[in-house]
Length: 453
Image (cartoon, rainbow, N blue to C red):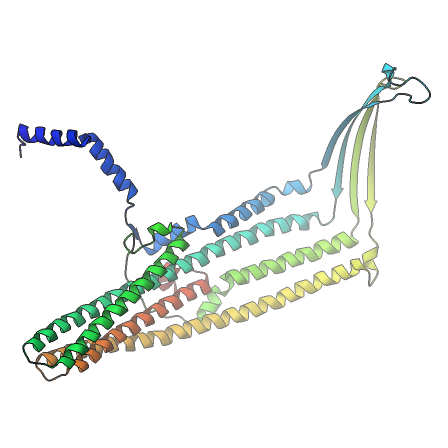
């Protein structure tokens, strides 16, 4: 459509009176869009990625991992010799037996360089401990990531359940308000009494109160979830954070004994306990070798001084020392006790591993059994929802036909709301147990239903 020239002139004139050119107006609109952040749509995967990138604890754990990695990648530093360089200037003059500070020959200088190397029998054990420390730190970092991931997903699905519950409560509120309007009309026409109107008004206000309270609780949980993701609290509102998806569960057929055989050894706590046994075993060998095996020390030093009587002079010295420990061979000494304590630590760690395995097997069996029982409960809850919804439809129809009282209609509506809430709670509990099982088996939560036969 063609704009008349006088219309374009009027638009320019308006901008001129307001002191804003069309270009400035566009720039101002752009600034307003920047000041108003866009709504953040989050899927479960996006929420996990955001939390992993913003977690301060993971950042600190990453620093520790990098430090351990540097030590593990530079094991040669354990055999690198100690090198020292030194130099100095001196001045010598008589104080009581002559005239001080008159001789220019009192100045002297010295320089030295030294090198020492200690060859300990436990050097190989020390290197293995450094490498094991890095692997332990890596396991701790990966486990922290997995635990944070599970925590985020649990909160995400909990909020989805709350969001679905809000939709149900909103529907109940709408039904109650519609019934109140119908009852008010019927009362005005003399078809029903005032008691029915008051009961319907109470039901509508109760539904509105339940919705308001649930919305407030949802907002609080959403702010806590935003803090977990590292988001600013100003952006933590239902209008600015939208969780995508619905709470949908799939049945998991879990054979606990098969899961124990296949995946028990992959649990982080069991792997960590085995690493602890390996570390204590290395410490035991290290203690034994340091206490009872001979060690060899090599050192060399060069020293130069001047001017002296004959001018500059230097010297080179070296030493080779063999040390043979004796104390630890004598029963009851501190060295002998240290060896015994190291052996006892290894034995205790093996018992701790056995206890950890027993508790892990019990946890897997318990989760598998609870999942089976929970699914049976969900099927019953779904049937109850179908019955409650159908009962409400028939009750509403009977009320319209004048065969059902208003109080009975309200009870049917409340039964339907309660059945829906119980189903949501059951589905959320099943999803939570599924996530706990994924954590217990150390597998990805999203691949749980595909990885379990």
